[in-house]
Length: 388
Image (cartoon, rainbow, N blue to C red; front, top):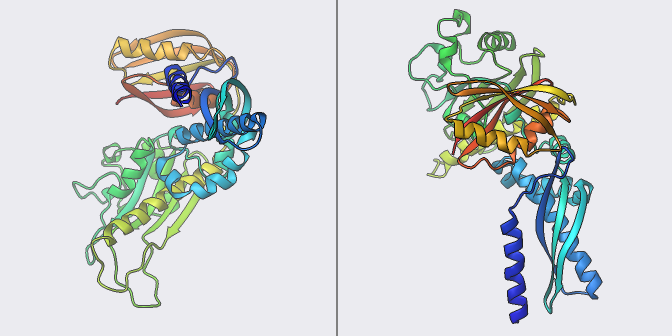
């Protein structure tokens, strides 16, 4: 028993001491990490070891998935994630190396270094509607009105009424959790025509406002955030009717209508949160549709421009440059082009696409700040540094 205990301690130190993520070894779009796999003590020693190695490979893919998918989507759609992605986890394993193994009386352990093809996993998650595009979009203009109480008129910021938020609170909460940069109403102050001052706009009106605001995506529609009593056998009116418009393409790329919970008696304390969750799930489903319909960023290479905003100090900039330079399989010939108060512009040689670089940056550890991807183009990348 003493040998088993000390082996577990040693393996734990190896795993956590090395860090959850290791720098990819020269291949763009690949994440390398060490994982401890486990298996029941069934069969001979070779069979136990193979089962523990297979468990480690699956755990490695699952760990990368967790870093890529919105937490609320994970909680809601674990079954789909299992059936559509994790059931074929070995397809996303580029290579693996067994570093240590042990077979005890009750279980077998294997410490495995696994290289996961994050680019292929990204495509599979997007195809399954599980990968949200929030961090790859240009700023979003929200034109969603809210019915917040029975008998009261809808609330919407483009009406001109003071104090209305840029998005209904449940909608804004979801978008913020996904890293979406919302366009604030002040951008369009004095530029909204009288015919657009109504709770629900048509596509043409929404696209015109989106272009004026410099938006990449417009979300329009209505939500109801309070519970309604409806007769038995009848459905309540929708809690959300939402549409997403791609401004560059000038067309709708997603559409969601959510009915939400029905209440046939006086709603209790849990009714309000249930309606709010239905609204938020509708927003997630809308963005999942956008993910499935979004065009791929073209693979590229050569010299690209990287613009940083939110730079608080020279130390922040140097830390970012150090992490960026460590991505040796993807980034080469990095140099600082220019810098000013709160911003910097870098030039670099890229052995891949800007989309791949954005993906890699999202899983790096920058210490006391995070990186938000604002815009991805074939020849340029815009990032914002956000304090933790």
